[in-house]
Image (cartoon, rainbow, N blue to C red):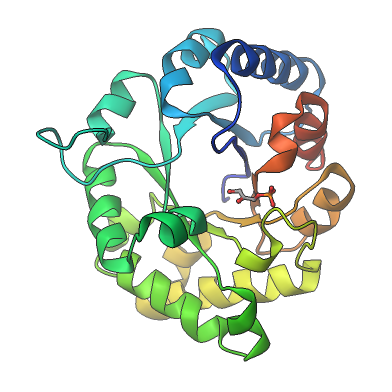
Length: 254
Ligand code: 13P
């Protein structure tokens, strides 16, 4: 059985007090209300990790993630944060290759291959993001592009390594736009990605990997999207900043 996951990517939002308030509300609501066994991952800015880790404490359902990390262990890389540092702050997951990192910070598939490998060596779970821009979808190139992203960043891994990766399919045209992919579009791409993995590795490996959908997931569309057979949860942006909305998205699995 694949893990169900709902991850909240806070992006560059919340002061520390705001972040602590949001996290503690989510932790309490999840504890009190959620019936299902989905993993909930809070992904705040780096500097809030320790503060939020302290709030999570020994809670079983809630995990901590970071939004990025550097591809080296330590050294003269001013302003960067390493995978080992994230682990030392209590993080278990890290987003890699978010479309905003690709677009604004020039992250390439080759760099992401390095980061994924390094993160796994540090026993962190990468949440590897892929997804096409609007013009690529309109030209019918989305499958080809996502195949390339996944191949370049992940297919250098062994079967044992790729099993530890979480994939997030986030069509760029659906991020922060209120324009969600339809449940059918999400299912189609998730099944497509899983088939690529099965062809490269085998079906058993492909079936073990959680593939999350991201892009304008809200409480009112989460249930339909999450009910698709190849959608194993969501990577949530805007709605993860509201504790009630985010918890209700987690409850879509109930
Ligand atoms: P929104 O949910 O705000 O569309 O953001 C999705 C996202 O980018 C999560 O990583």
